[in-house]
Length: 552
Image (cartoon, rainbow, N blue to C red; front, side):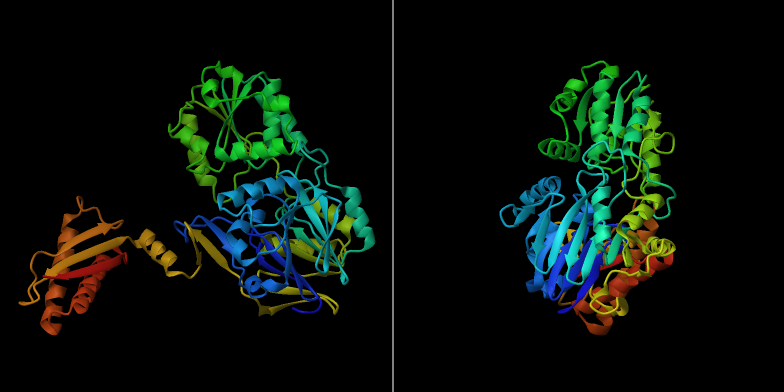
């Protein structure tokens, strides 16, 4: 788009995660956030999922800058992976810069990415855009909304936010500045939709700290405190409460140690609180009522510390009377794994405290009352809900309409919203390329790549390998056909099925030799079809079948 103002989401709209928004103004392009999401069962073996940025790559000369709202993975995690295709100056606040620099170092990019650290309230000119960061509270330090001023009007990109009047870390949302920007006039607000179905407000982090204080009081054994490592405000509360209750703190979990290190470097954790942290091995020598262990793994991630404790994989044993405090949300889809983890911990004698039993967690996203307050502060002419699945977006659009916002657009990834100079419109028929890319070890694969299709096939149907040897002179099979399988049949329990498969493969090979002679390709294909057909009939599965014929 060469003239006018528009917004084009390539991720994070119609889904939660993988946020990437492309703004364009008179030919100049600005990206806000470059996030990731995590693969589901349809991408076995993939590490993370990225937005497809083919549109950005094709228009790279027009890209003037990349703005990062905050340091959560779904907003910052994709940048190192996609840097080669979107090289432009990066703008972000101090805490996010620490997180990004660590990621860049891991990929050998620390000297290649021009990082510009900005402060809330500063105005920065980026091509045809004038950006200003505004403090908003979230579940990680330095959440930010971004006001993007253009000659066509101001865009308010809220980022992830809540209007918590009593945060435990960092600044509260800058209500005064948000109202001032609203007073100046705002063309469009692209707002967080995550908690649009939650009535009232999202709850205060300060109130959670008060509740955690009561939970910890009177605990007579060791306490295992589990939360998201990125929720530094919650971690800070745990550290301060441990000190209040005369407990030393041990950290277990790489990400927990990293995030606390960044927080200390940014001045969010006081030295006297940080100095209460001891080595986990030292913690094992102290009386159990004098220790709090901060661990990762609130979503029952198999490689995280809490799962390893439950499975006796690390030297942090549980005993009768210990408390495991899960200070986090059970993310939809993870409930079964979390309850399996809770059962294992309970069998070892621990008392489990979680969001369903006690007030130990609040969301980092605005609920209905806060969303309404944001609309009243900003007073946009247009509402474009983002950061949510389609139902979330639709509900927020209707909510904005009920609050008097004149126009609302519900869009999806790949749909451009034209914002000026003409009357705003979203042309859903005008789709731009978007989709998912999968980080697979050292490679990045598109979602149609045959490698992922093959892995799905293997995970659902298993694999069978058929091998035969043929005398090239006589055309006879030299030995018995051999069958090996993975993930479809237990050879020791069902030997007769393997015997049947050998018989079918042998007969198919002999028939192919009679018809085509010693044609290796024909023989292999005949054996493959025969064995696959047998397993489909006998097991109801279509295994990946590889047939190999050796000429001797």
